Image (cartoon, rainbow, N blue to C red; front, top):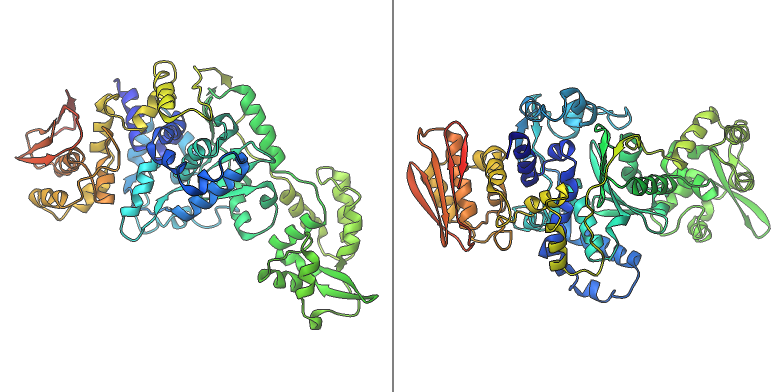
Length: 573
């Protein structure tokens, strides 16, 4: 491989957030790697999914959400995959993208986005303030195998992953377990988040482990408000799809243009809703500072009784019932008689009169209707115009998507449909390797060493695995060998697929070949040897020559010789 190809293909092994930003093809290569993995296919045999056979995609998806909530934790630990240097990464990516372009769209390289989202210093936000200003996390997007292996990691006990990992997991699982076509799943990446939009019913958004329906998006709860942050306050850097991708900084797009138009239309419809009393109540749930301007009126035995809005919302906190929805009357029944007032409160808007006004179909996208609402509220609410401006943003989010004025080109499609078995899917992906770059990169993300050039894996192992080097800093090379032999002898990857050194060290398990790479990586980074470090991989054993010879037993059936020179050059035969 030439240097540029090697950089991209080795990035398919490590899959850091930075690498996916620079090489957008990598995002869907991970999804395809997860689809090829046996792990998610095993979920189909779980009783909770088998009993849903024949049920709707939506019902299966809701069950998948609960399964992921139960089985996976969200993880954003800086130490998991180690740290790197900002200047080092800028130099590394300079043949592909300028430092200015990176700083415009990546939070760790200077992007600050909307002031609302970045009120706090970005380094403090990520817990980086304890490090030198040029130190940044080496966040890697985990395969399903690495996510599952967090069960082995101390203080976890459950599978785990960060937002990009969870988005890739959801996309693969929605296809395998819920039979949702990949054509209906769109991955949305912003500088600080990754989520998916599923084009079904009124739309469903994934958000880390959770799902957000359109109704939930507008319900005004704290969880929903947090789910809104990325699309409300950040530019979308990339949309990834089975047909291809579109990136905010690249003029060339491979996503099917009709699919991107459909996605844009459906997402914008999902992010907008009509204004009614229930939506206004949801708005007040979020913007609690305005509750003091409203009151609720009810009829009690022919007599009007009034209740401060903030008191009613306080009752809602501990109740299963909600303000202004179909459970509203039951919520009123929970209110103590002492909280009702027998006269209309001055300087508060009556919600029954607000309901009558909103029934006239106020469209907040029309200036005239906004002005009518301001006029209705102004006699009671100081600065009603500010309230209405907030309300406009609440009922309609305009996603900042990549400009569609791109040079669109088609690549050979990867044809995967619900109902295909795993082996047929693997064959369909691998058959497109020469005509579709994502399919080729997917085999590397899948780590199938029988079908991969080894050079990208070797480069990644010796250049981008800082955790293993750091963990062994106080050990002699002989102690490193004993440490590795004391770990479990099972790879987190099946067959002839290989883990990287930091995966072995983080999860304290690995096949002999993988452990050999760990020891060789540590020895190389110590730089104490003038002679090359050599790995000889054969049936039943992997030998590392680093001053002396270290032997590791292996159950994999790979054969390869790797030589790493002191200057970093590598030979693979």
